[in-house]
Length: 435
Image (cartoon, rainbow, N blue to C red):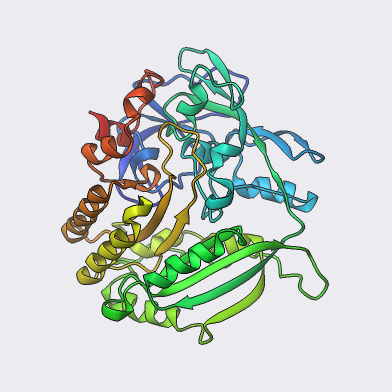
């Protein structure tokens, strides 16, 4: 057993046995106790942990099996990362129909968490674009699941199923055509939440991608101020070819204290808000930095110090979103425990395919909080009450402490999901919210 940073938030810490998986055609490796598939470790809490048990390390399943450049159908092993997919298909005019905030996740992890992106209102969640996959169970049986024929429910149980139904060996995706590597981007500085909701409504039909950064420490008349970004794919034109993304130096070590704290947050948020003096700014951007701005900073999670951080992402239903987001931001501003990674966006109405899928109609807010101990947990408990009262939900892939009651209310099909669990697969998250 050894302790590892198996989750990106570096909280909680857990000890595991590690077993590598390299052969999709072979038997499941032998393990004692319970096991959990583990991709690239980019989930934030304990949904990717199995304390005291085994993690099946799937990055060894990293082979491309087939790609049809005429139709955009891709078949690859489950340990391939989204970054590796884009490197293969983008030069051939294809791109992922849905991509989350990092390209460093495996395709198996993206499926298991049914991730979403900045275009949910147009394309829904990741699972809507999965055509089929193979599931290897602990009893040695194999099951091919297809989106077009899911009478037995295994497809819906596995998409968003947090890796608990078995080991994904391969996944087949339907990609989408893109005209080039460029996006036409417009960034709009706004003064409050009313403007955010108005911009979201006005942008929904004509812009595929939209997202907002929020200054979560602003209060009073400045509450909810931020930057709204909307974008569409652009044809590659001479003179407007954006520079290719590049890696920058990252955090080479973990500082003794979090660099994100009360002293640094308020001036950073103010400078970030005023970085653009004009209310509107248009530009042409490369795809990858637009979708994955933090991927260029290696080990950026280290900036939160040895105690790590907690990400908090919720979704509030449309009828209660405006009041609910206002209440959340007031509580955060009052606490002084803000985040400079504060993202606000609208989900559309396209249904997510998984029994435990998080994305649903409404407004989603995501923030990172340094782990300051009791004070941050007290704050998050207060935020939970606001979300619960509004009938919202928290994102399992980014959670490390929601209560069983909150989970079971927000994901009422969890008991149906229980019937599909592999009896030898488990996670810290699942035990915490169901036992």
